[in-house]
Length: 238
Figure 1 (cartoon, rainbow, N blue to C red):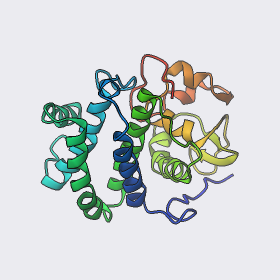
Figure 2: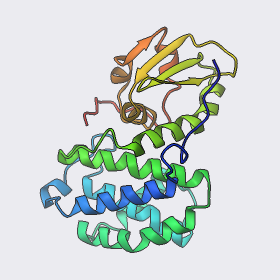
Figure 3: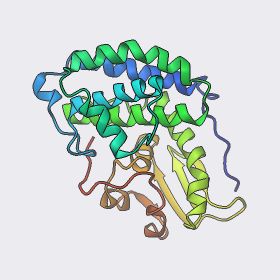
Figure 4: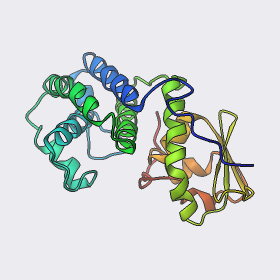
């Protein structure tokens, strides 16, 4: 069984920058219904961030890329500065900044290949963290979820193989993906949805939650290699 080819931006005729823009616009629209109390709600996966801090981070990513503040990009210090510099700004003010900078940002990075993919994963992931905190879950069957899952697996394949973890067959909503050396046989299988896979890959499920997923074979040997960020210490419900 060979590793399947990525369909990202082919099956659904979507570019990653378009997915980013759609996520951004939806979050800005969502903000209009977020109360002051909800804006202060904690984000379970990224303590001590609040809902408002999630928006501050996302607006800050746009500003930092446009202004060339990329030293340490992605580090805790980089993201902390985005939140700290906007501490005096309300949710409406942060969204106004993001509304103004977003289209410029999308146009600037649309041709940057993997960069826009990681930024799109970022806005989608934090967007669902925000939705969970205010009790407004997103559409798990949105075609964009499948686009992102396909792209994430394609980009993650080399990292997984380099980890030395056993060859893993993932059934994403019934469709097969293989992680491991080409030509090798899978010894572990995971059946999941595109949504759940993205939450696992980007550190939004605890080790216990991942272990409880639909596995066959020695799941423990694959779990450690199947996430990009550190796993949370508590179960994440969204």
